[in-house]
Length: 375
Image 1 (cartoon, rainbow, N blue to C red):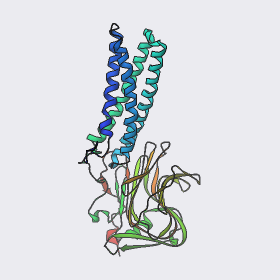
Image 2 (cartoon, rainbow, N blue to C red):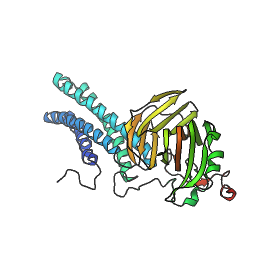
Image 3 (cartoon, one colour):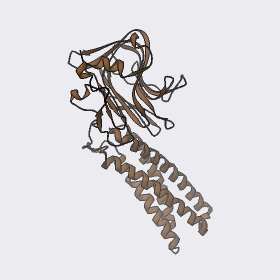
Image 4 (tube, helix red, strand yellow):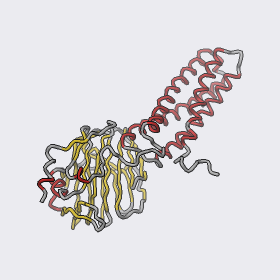
């Protein structure tokens, strides 16, 4: 017999309700203790409920952090999970400090004074507001986005489509999300519609090819050590980039680059020699936000980076590999970068804005004629 049933992805749902209940009951017991002073045990009960609730918030935060590394998030949910994580951290810190303050107050007998007792109750009531906000975001993740449930959608239907004809041209959402999938027009689109902020387009050989198993790809070949930074689309704030690539015959660093404001200032998820890490370039100076994480891989890779409210997450094949934190970034363009030599195969790229829930798709006016102009 195991504590977690097979259909439950993690223990967080079993833990999270206890601190919520304990702390809410603690506030009410505290209030009753002030009103019904002839029952001193109410004050004592409230103290221990606060202590147990604070311990519960630590357990809930740690299991929630673990859960975030295990479950799949649809793109619109990332902004919610980042806010939920921040609120959960603040709630844990608040009640951990508050419980210590209540213990000290009881030990020193400061809570015998009405002003102190009332003040402590008001502070706890404010903390209950943190609980409500945290729980609301958690409920939204489950009931709105299906996170952690068997009915959760697997994939980001907002921008990705199964009909390959929809990707014969570049497509873009009204909120700036965009998608590209390799087609016979891939070389023309990649050469003319994408912007090469760094590197010489002529230093790379671009071809549309189909693999032995029929996968349409754009093959980018560099015979020498070369670098490139390639972008497309409008500036976005909270966003997700996903690319399906094959790097088996590439020696160097492949980046998903985001919040690109100029060729020397942007953030990135780097994949190189079986290792993954997050970093940023500020005025040409590289700073890594996480340590290298080994991830032995070969063949086709589904690489994804998410930037949401100061949380940066890097995934390979739907597995969270690296998670970093920083300030909320200034809106910037998105794309990819590479530095090295060899062959990169790209099947598709999509970029999603996380600032709205729905991404209605429209063809870009200056791209809809690509299919008819193919040779």
